[in-house]
Image (cartoon, rainbow over all chains, first blue to last red; front, side, top):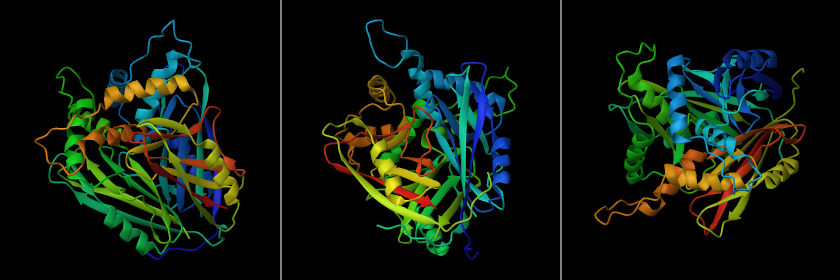
Length: 146
Length: 146
Length: 146
């Protein structure tokens, strides 16, 4: 396939989410696909990232059983830190585990855009992972291409 | 260095792999470099991602000793989950560990393309990490730039 | 917002760092923002990656208390491997933990560039994570856009 030369475009959109619980996994593939459609970009790269440091964006299968396992697993690898009353950290210890869980799952994914669509394998879905919910949060979608 | 203004190009290629064993680490740097050469793109970004949710793409040193340590380490952090006969999850429990291992190693890497080549430090190599092998799988390479 | 069509530009810069200690976390947001300014690129994507396989680049909050917790946590998940005198691995076992710690924190981040600036949520900062310090190392910044 011969590469095609055309001018570059960019498109930016925020997806707002509010998980009622402290932790949640939310499939945002449809919203991201809609951003790609809006952009009019056919060939390029889409960056999808959490704008918050206690939430993740990652790609995985849309199977509820998997996320029940992830919840237990993440708590095992990055358990809730119990506050130490003698510690005067400016960061609240009650969200340290949320930072760690987000590092394990990742801040962002970059997805190819091909033929005006997210270029995915058969089971790929984009998930938002919330580890400090109960308020409105944002995911940034930035698409560049032509 | 003054930025240069030229039209954008894109290039897409799938790399097919088949690991005979359940788990494997395969160096795909040469195939990705060949995709960059084919694309004719000199300056840009290359996205290299697994199209499967139980396989990883990551950057690390090409030293076999390291991968023996990774295998033990990943099994310690994300051990095989033994099926529970009372559980009717639609996802097979026998691949839950593969999802987790892939999250630890990562779905994708984005690599700068400079002067028509992957812009790497001295020990950087692109690896495919298979956690549910024994069949054909794909890695997507999408390059945009000029 | 209607996408804008303009020619593509690219910009490349290396940030040099030297952590005096074996491990360190260094906020490099200001240097990366300066690269974006130098590039003259208003809309695009910035890739920021470690050029070394025992160092990470990631996004997190700039709170020193958090990094004390990260240090303990990373040592728990990826402890220092004590050399086995019977093993003739070509890779030094004394840096295996550094590879693993870097995988947990990640090689790279991709950040949107909007209006000539890093497009960040309120607490997002770019950090360099050193796990095998004591010498000069490099972070690559590659920006493409218009």
